[in-house]
Length: 259
Image (cartoon, helix red, strand yellow):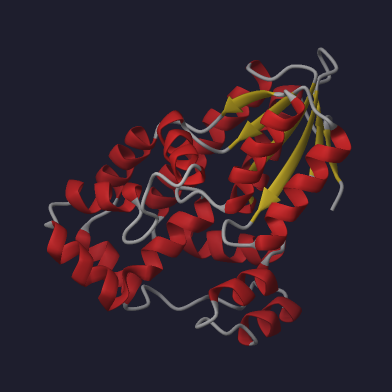
């Protein structure tokens, strides 16, 4: 978590970085909101995804199968529905996990954010850009051969620039148990290593999934949130938002790392 202060007007943002399939992240979001009691809760959701999440919370939607943003991407790439299902069964979980890491598949922490915002009467800001724009950017950035390369390993992880302790942590990960893997790797250093690999192998995908959305969310935090805000975003977005906040404040001011 980090603390962002707007040096121009005194607004405050408690930026909570989460892992989208982590139960502990949801608990952390609940605890931070109840402790801070913000005027505004900012979530890394767009209107469409928030509406789908509210339907899910009321038991009106089916959470099984391919997540809707990924289904849209497969359709945009020209993959028929049955082919998309077969690709997922054959290994497209790699791409699904990429969606989860960057926030395109909402996790429980966002449901908690909505519930807590409603409970305390805080203003809710849906701060992500529309999934249609992100799907369009991904369609322009990625090809089916790219997806196949992701499934088959893409490129090997480059360990030479990674901290040895982090390398050992990666080696201990059981990728067949996604939740425990996420908890083991839920650190800024681990996320940087993973997103760094994405940038090396698929730079245009990283731009669509991370950079462009970091721009959009930072602008929202600066211009749509007032008073005290708790902002809930995927951990992969923390560095980008903090960097853009510093730029907006004119240097290194306005950002304090808490945990």
